[in-house]
Amino acid sequence: MPEFLNNLNKEARVAATWRILLISCVTLGCCLGLVALLDLVDRVVPWKEDSIAVLLVAAIILAVCSFVLLALWIYRRRPNAQELAAKVEDANPDLMDRLNCAVDLIEKKDGEYNRMEERVLEEASEKTNSTIISKATRPSGQAKWLTLIALGMASGMIAYALQWSPVQKAMGYFSGEVGLNVSTRLSALDGGD
Image 1 (spheres, one colour):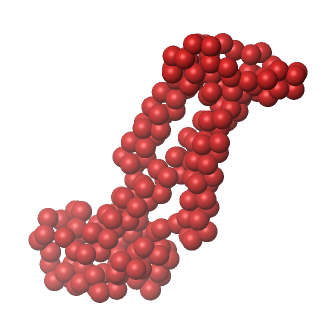
Image 2 (image 1 turned 180 degrees about the vertical axis):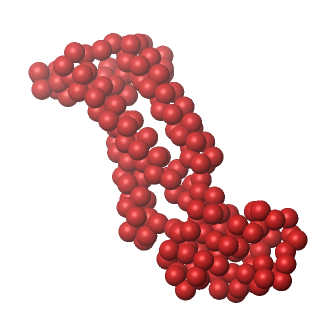
């Protein structure tokens, strides 16, 4: 298998990885939104520990299942070599469709090439390297940094959300401590503890 085809297959996996990181951000953001909504509802209509615990566990199971299903779907629909070759050709017009032709030849023929087809494969190998392919197919630097920053912020906010009343009530329920005193922001405003 030619090196450019190995590079295209590697870039397909990299593209799937970046998409999975993006849905990680979305999933964490949805979890954060749900916990914020539960906290808001708990301020207006305080819930008992057992009811909020079941709701939180169901939401976590739903979020994990959604993430796994989306990650599998994205990985199965990762771009193929022909799609990535077209992107590389668009970014590097000097290839003059050699890479597309070479990928088509490899996929349609089984190693039995005539002299002209061998020359197309050789020229595609000479004119493409991993740097050219990765520059054309990977997200820009700004998109990478924004995704990583969003992932970090979402993770940090989830860690902060562990202090919110619904999460504290659920943790109290699962710890089994009788009479665990959880004060909400509302009870602190009313003069409670």
